[in-house]
Image 1 (tube, rainbow, N blue to C red):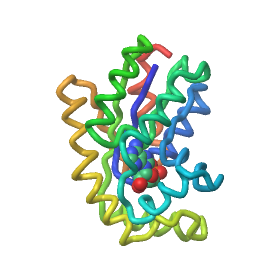
Image 2: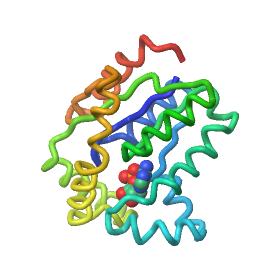
Image 3: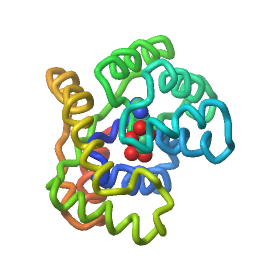
Length: 192
Ligand code: AMP
């Protein structure tokens, strides 16, 4: 089973993805985590990505698609993945469909976490406080940029999947456990 978690920055995609991983033994693919790892390792990709991420823009599709392709073909991902933070553009979504088709796989569910954007700014500010500002992009002004980028480039993915009847909406403003139960209900009927 392959699942996409969609929603603006701070909607709780990472939190829910980690839970699904521990409950269902699936592999989480977070392009944001991969990029942060590249930055921490001081790789050439990390150096390039850091400036882009710090200002809240998107890293180029070809870089992201290369990272995802490498993971999707690995045996650990054969049983299915939870995609968190990817795809983020319609071009990425189209490329993902092609990659999965080559592997004789497909997306089984797209879960959209809907949130109130004013509350998001609070959440991001809390996360910045809790992590001691570990993420340079956890700042209110960068968040506003990231939200604008979400609306311009990522939200168009919703009709891309919605037209195929694949999108399930979950209210991301509910407590973490309630959101988790709702996701379980959605995934419950799917074969792992
Ligand atoms: P995230 O942890 O998913 O919020 O991602 C943090 C930052 O990494 C984003 O603001 C982008 O700069 C970059 N990033 C993560 N995933 C992608 C993606 N699929 N496409 C382009 N840029 C991405």
